[in-house]
Length: 209
Image (tube, rainbow, N blue to C red):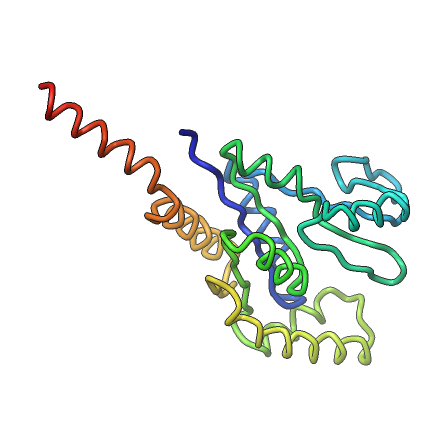
């Protein structure tokens, strides 16, 4: 029987570096990146099915009613969500799927797909987190404090995850995530069917050798 892939959900507070880590992870590994759906209009250069699946609000709401999303949220008047069918079909076909998502979305996914691998990206320190947000150069003092306070609260959610990875450097963080994926592939509850098949094969050989 074909072994299923993993759904690897990566999230963390703003400024922790999860986007940079995911980009580096995908460059090194044959992972499938989940494409989100949204009701906002495409920006210049964005391609439907590559950057997002661009849906009308009516289409999105119909998919909500039919439970077509692993998670979704409304942000500033637009909907964003993770299509369920495309993600689960990729996992069922043996592909490892990476989903970079905010914390609230990750917790929704955990409710609908608890067998996923949930990884929380942490900054080396709150001081470093604040500096990373400042280095973006797009924050006023007021918005900086709002983001920093939100990030401080979000870190409390780390206990809801399977793993925590401190982002000292992107290279080391990627290595840790790769190690987590290898370990998860070896878990008995994930490979028990293959183990039983192997056991039956060994018994058959012993009986007829």
